[in-house]
Length: 563
Image (cartoon, rainbow, N blue to C red; front, side, top):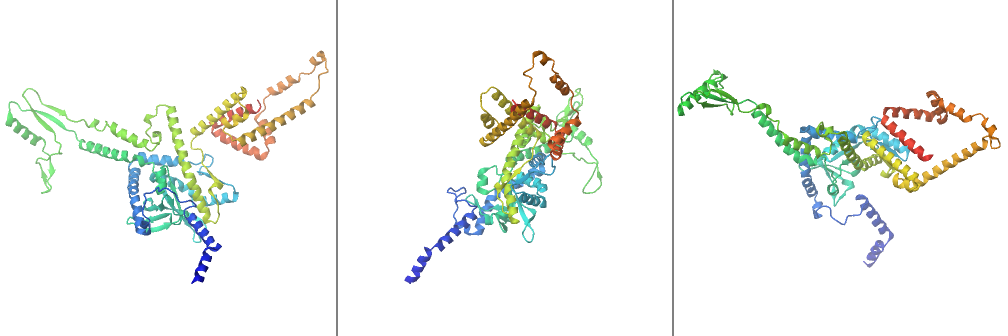
């Protein structure tokens, strides 16, 4: 017995058990995404015994997901019933996925350090038609706050061939204490809580609009842009239904007829009115009991015309009680809630066809700039998720890459915002030129503080400019050395010399033709670079604003280089 205990003790103290402990620890860390467990509980503290029962775990998450299901129902109704909100979703999704001007189908560009890997990524995106379905994915994400797509592979599981949408109301992220389980990251359940499927983290493309940090940390779920429109939507729906009921109930015109009763008084006058009313308002209709025509009294509606008696000599008259032409015109309260609902989506009304508030171009430009900033913020939120999606797809194809090895570049959203950026750069150049001329600051300050360069970039630029200056100085010295020395000529001989300057001026007055300029450029640049320059000129001709701004920037840069 002593020998057995001794052997066990020796085994526990050996390197083998230490190796096992390290491997176990490594696997645990990998299971939680290489993160240390948090010290604080972001969820409500729950007894771990509840997680031992799978049904208890599902019930708890179904309860947390119940409010989301109600929201999803409201979002669907808002999308179907309210054209303004449906248009807001379309506009936001279109601007996020707006293709490049040069390539009409290129929504974003992936740039990897390795050309081979980049080609593989582009092939994968083209294979699954990702850039074609991205609009629908982005729109669903804006609508619900999340979107789930299953990565469908071939039978050998060597490549991703398709994306299959998973209904959002059936998906539950497996999150505990703010950490998602990578081996069972998402659980698909039915309405009754029965488990349909378990998905690993790399088997699902989960795109989330995680603008609410607390919600994302606790539940790994995003927030819809329609979330803050729900109250206005419900109020507006009730008000519009009330307006419709009012218009329908007042559709028929009603009258108050003043009937002359002569000298009749009291009950006699009332009986006379009743008899007149029965004779006047009789209608020919089919009796549902007999199926024959009947001339008996048949009221047109619950709200009948009113007949009032008048005295002799006052004369008969017919007065309109309500004017149907004005019914529904006083809808300021409905417009207030409608505007409130549109504003909650942070979408300019000019995109939805409600541009009555736009009274100047400056107001429109400010709204457009604010909207584009929101679009770029959404793109920044989606970018790391898109990178992780590409990493997972490449993992299926046995290619290991990391998100920091490649970048995603989005095209320009709108020329207004791009023009504003160029104007800002131009102002920076103007300020830099003024400060340099006044000798208030050195070049390093201008490059780093005004132009926004790093110290290394600024130093590299200064070194390059110094080199160019030395080259120009050497060329100038060489030209002066080869020039004719006229220092020993007398004043008379100097005056009789041919006027070379006038000759040069005459040559300068003769402007070169377009063919001369193109021939000089072709000789200077070479055939390949000259063709690229021609392509750039065609693009600039289509966008004269960019061409004008670019010309001004070139002039300012040249003034800076040769001042």
